[in-house]
Image 1: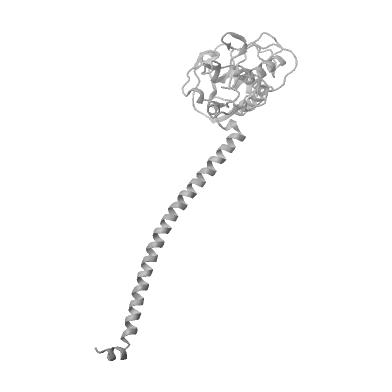
Image 2: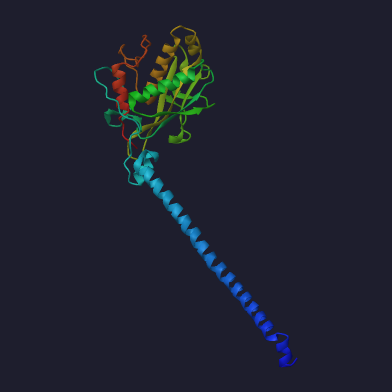
Length: 294
């Protein structure tokens, strides 16, 4: 094809347009590649930055919550991070005089009772088998009364099918789970729990452990109520008040009160018709809520 023929058929323009199309195609390919690589790096950095920001915000929120409410952490963890343990409940102020006694004392210090850690919740599970109608609710209401009298926090942790076993009247068997093991409240007869024989309507107590700081503390416990006695009491006009008094008495043992001979106190070893804690009982309960944090 001659130069004139090429010009007449617009050859230069066609070639120029083709070259321009090829160049534009190359430009697009390069731009796509560059954008993909750059946006990939940016996306990677953006994801990483977002993840770190989210992580940082989460950590800051958690730290803020812990600083604001140190009791969200268990006592030992608070100690490790330098936060002083906080009592969970408010210690009651009790005036007056009365008689009380403790089940156990700190080694070498007869004035300091063994008690539960006031900076830890005392979790309580209830086995309703054999209970009279409304029995579990009666126990939960009594737990609130003991909370108010001690400043300890007794938290209902649900029902259970666990059965009670006792080494003695004031010491339940077993410590599987250690501090994580909830207190067990249950009903039984004296065939299952021989400690309920004779005229015993209930037993209560806790397991004490010497901890790393040298203080002996209760870590778990139990209350077992006589199912036959409670069934009989439930049929009486004043049966609920009588059952409540027995539950309060046994919860008193659970947190560390011993029997006394004073007829003015609910912790009297014999049932003399009282229906509520006496002044001495409340003085002893307040002292048991004043133990040291672990």
